[in-house]
Length: 94
Image (cartoon, rainbow, N blue to C red; front, side):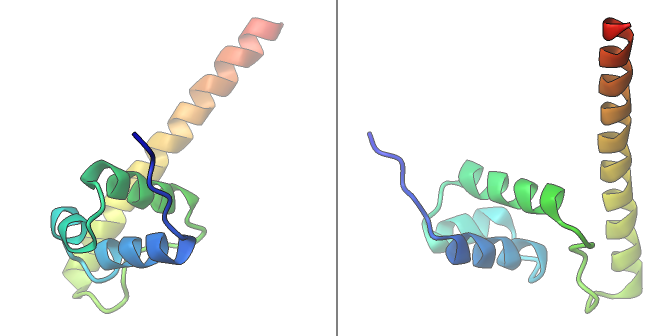
């Protein structure tokens, strides 16, 4: 069995359909004939690699706020994990 290779611009447009255009991952994966798990990995990678917020400015303020709160929680969790890992390795090498 072979692994399908997708061009970067295809991946970015698929992620854009999910994140910016607010389509569900299920509908996008069906429409583009991409495995759901593969699309989910692309979206998660895009969110973790983003240098700025992926929350669309065109959404209603309440929805922007909800999404920013969720993004903030996700970023805090990532930060906390990094702090714990740093403390663990620092303690181990002393």
